[in-house]
Image (cartoon, rainbow, N blue to C red):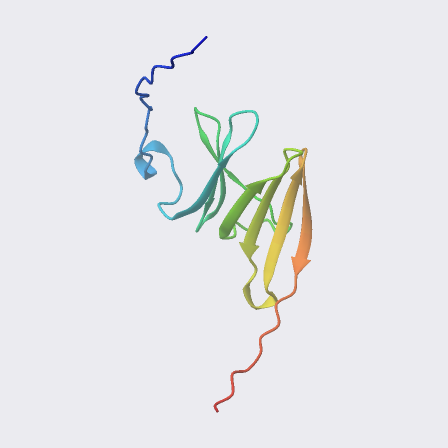
Length: 116
């Protein structure tokens, strides 16, 4: 018995968001979607959360500052991981564990470049 599959074109709904729609920053570096459908945006002005209706700027750093957020990942357990810039101290790695942010320091050592 042979099975025949017919391919149908798919259409996608695309929205463009700007500051006019509430997007706090036009510089977005990464986007992920969690298991609940929430979109997370890593931007120049920090971590942005969009639930389909409204934008929320999220403080993941204990200092309370909105720091640049460059890379987002969701692990197999559904935890959101965020990398951010912390100035001369190096980078920071954060994990959203339920409602709590856990910080993991990533030391960066600068090595002087010498001429040959």
